[in-house]
Length: 197
Image (tube, rainbow, N blue to C red; front, side, top):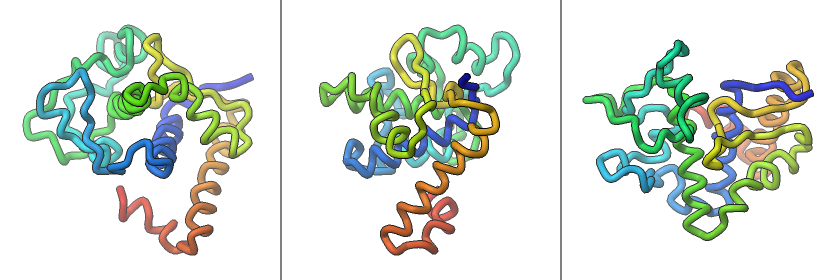
């Protein structure tokens, strides 16, 4: 039976962002501004690069205690994007702060991009068609919230705890290595995380 990947799911969501950029769903790449319809203030100026680095400056509380932001986001709110409730911290932008909410906002933005193109259903099949199926990850499932947003921070499922943590994760790593080797950029694969993130 499938087991839950929790925060390893973030790697899936971030890989999907790369696939979306490669397939020109996000033509501005990492400089894409997070112009979510829920935001009408300075938050809409944040870039995808800042979000992927978790240096967006949002005042999200990652503690897992009753009433805190993280469990509320996952188990209480109608959507993991929290409908724009989380405000910016004063002078917080540019500083790293681990945040599951940030990952889910990226997922929400991807959904918004597909919606703008009139391709809402393609958003739901995107992980399977562009990521899981090509890698042979037949058991992989990325769960959505009630609003249809992938819970990219936490709710990725795959068969077997050992397979999820070792086999499935290694598949992703080998896939990324293969992409760089195909372009004759083997050394770039090793420096990619440091240089780009």
